[in-house]
Length: 172
Length: 207
Image 1 (cartoon, rainbow over the protein chains, first blue to last red):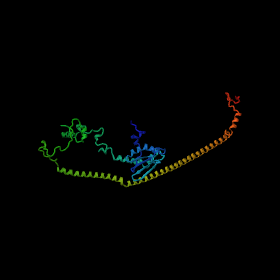
Image 2: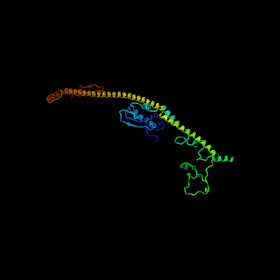
Image 3: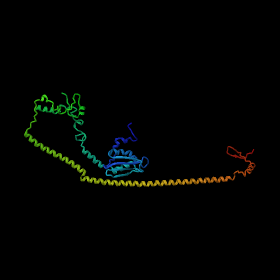
Image 4: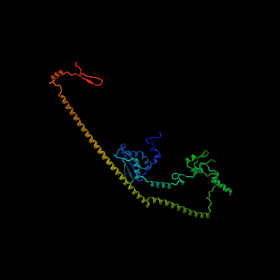
């Protein structure tokens, strides 16, 4: 029925949007090597299970790959766009610690995110009228409580230009 | 006569048309080249709208000035936007920012490296401990095995000695006659009596 999997909360939009790791533009590929059994890989397993969906949701253009049972001890590897590789050892660590560590070394900081949000708000003024691609509304007739579009309902006679012109002429 | 809808896209027109409207896409130039002129337009001479020359001169001046100002404003604004973009990407501030980013990145990478080393040390220690544990257990197992073997040998030796002791009392072919004589001379009485308190009485009369 509606619930699928062991922790279906991981599939909710709410949970995904709460993810707080947004990578810097330099990070292109993320690789997680871990083991499916063993106490030492437990943190890595939980990280993959709980945090990776959030990370992928917030960074749709970063490639994330998981490799299982190929390593004696679990690690994360990040490939940046200038060829640099960043290795993060996660043996015996908790998944919360891992995600904090990753956020610290490769995540965008709070003030950078704020600045970006500000820039986005400045670029798109909600008061502008224009094509739907760039602005919220095209015409005032789309707003609730305003005069509806004359293409759907004809305007009352007094508002039409030709009536007003006729009245103005007849008065002269 | 019929309400013809204004110029809108075809699907929107179809959607918004009410019951009485005729759906016609109003297109200019319905007639083709060879079609005759309409009866109501037979003697028509098209004249352009009348123009007052003095008014026209004044208007032209004003329009040129107006258009000049507007074009200048537009160019100004466009240049400002482009300049901002340029500054953003390759200005001095941007260089500073890039340098600072690189610095921070290096610092963070160093910190990450230190963390990795710390974990590496912990891992090495742990592996060493595990190896020692394994060694100890192996030694213990070997010793236990040896001990068991020793005990087994001792047990067997004791059994052999006991057997040797008993062998002295065996009946062989040589002392067969002697033992028979002995047995006949000394009859043994196996009868006994026990009462409820557990007192055993072996002195019974042999029949």
